[in-house]
Length: 102
Length: 136
Image (cartoon, rainbow over all chains, first blue to last red):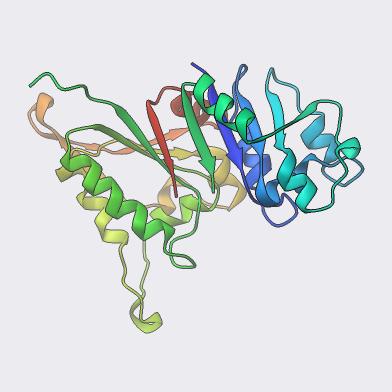
């Protein structure tokens, strides 16, 4: 019974991404999109907390929102997977519920 | 009469008056309760501020919707999960929250607290136990 968590706010603006991560369970997935993609870049103050988060939780980021913001896919941490809209749909379909972290 | 009852969790993570989210959440909860679903509410992060007692919005010109929480029991919404860490971070204790009760019809209508304090990991368990999670 795994959950897909989605985050669309910059982690530098509020605590949403960190709170989301703290409420995940092993087997869950977290997708960062819209301004949430700023949480997927490496080399910033939150990179260790996000990319280093390892509790059996898979981390994804929506590639088109990365590109829109000029974030090079090569700047992603190794633990984060870029997906397209089709991949987004697959994630929704393959999890038991989706929780949007507004 | 054997329609499927689903478990709905309404997640509240915002303070009460800065945005419309908290008030809208209550509206939706009451609608959901009218459909005889298994409704719970979760309060974490700034959402715990929604439950504080002593809210007085008169001079601010806002509608004080905090008394509505005390009416939830009449709509069979009797599980309000509150995260301990979120209270701690904000310097709040259970004493700072409204006393929200319901009458347990299975126990001679004894008055019981609707507030269930859970740890952060306990809240994750509550979330993982739902059919539908709606965020506000």
